[in-house]
Image (cartoon, rainbow, N blue to C red; front, side, top):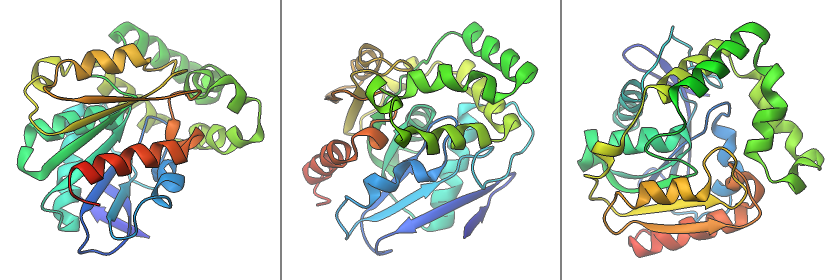
Length: 262
């Protein structure tokens, strides 16, 4: 198990592929850990250096006291790049991971050669919605909201199978304090003004049945960014990398080919 000791957090991270390969860094969604990308990583070209990590407050990473901010989480990602010796990378962020990617690409543009903004936006929901979720979790725990969250995460057909159960367990095992602190980060973030200055190549990915970041929300963010392109993965929700890993890995591989990494 690899741990990166940062300024005020310790991040659990994993690396697959040769250390000299083109680096692709993955940042996962709220309530998940780096296993979110398992099925995608195993479908990508073997010469790539594929790096995943558990955001602070999630998985096996430490859980410093909140609240967090997107800028703080982007700072963690930048320190992880330093720790891993990554000079430049393609950054793939899903949901809050995509918000981290946007902030990181503005903060350190020389380190992010391209962005994949998956099931995310420059602004996700209204602050009151997040405050209501935080209050419900503090009163009754994450498990009380699991069914509602999963209905936003997955298309109905997937939810009717046992394949969704590991994700239910992962969500409910997320440290409550870390989940709440990341909710506070999303509630306080509107990246619209800064994301429109992005100059890196950007691929946006959405799931047709996503109840957390509908395709129109993803597209609205991409419209802020010059020459961003959009891919819709049909019959998937908020985590298309789980429901349709072949399609997801295919879209990512095509993008990497355009960048000259494949």
